[in-house]
Image: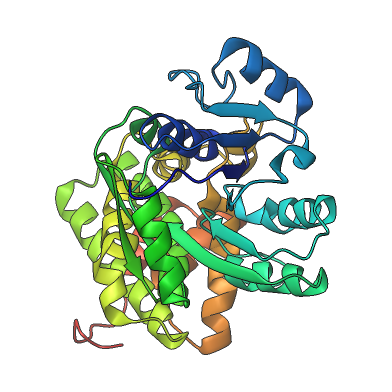
Length: 342
């Protein structure tokens, strides 16, 4: 970390928001206000010095102050939004209402997804909401292979910070990087955001394949062709091809498809075991982003005429009750083509 510690506000006390707060407080020395929507959760975190619902394994350092009061974030120099993609707009809108001042907002999104209703990426949501609130914003997207528990424990982790404002990306890279959290800057917001959203859907497919005991050959092929789908969609929307070979593309995809901590992979394992979507999502607040985002990704692809067969099959498995084995058979018997064909 370079320079004086920034006072940071983290909107969202789920597992990743909590992990960011812990790491930046402990390793980076940043004063952090960790906002939870639920006042009872904020009070328990303050008392127990842990997040008992989302990340009970790691203590909160003294630098982290849990709160359910958005007013407590008034003096934060940097705001990190770690809410799920479907709640991103509401959380940001609430923050802007609580802070109607004229000061420019420095905002980093850690959400990986696309709004189902609007098909907006988080950068688009942020600009819509700040414009509606008559506020100026400097925006960046944080993405990459980052399991919350490993980050919170201080295990070496690398990620990407992307902003169309190159000076802002560089400033965030320099101020938030630590010896255990290495950030690389990028100007490709579109590619980084789409990579983070689509990999969740591919990871559900990977979990399904593993659950069906298809073996390493199948998994390697699925990850590779999944990366092709991500790249094809990203390029169609103006993303840079090299982004998808980096941390926000291949890196995040491999982690989410193979790691035991991956919720999306777990969803696929459950689908392979015959569970319905209602059974998978019922009674838990750990719902994988890929479940909701599969529909949004399919719609975004259709809008550009981009073929995404793995994504299409997973939508049918999750929402139309298609047998996972049949989905695999249909993927394997599609028309043959050149590997590099876009």
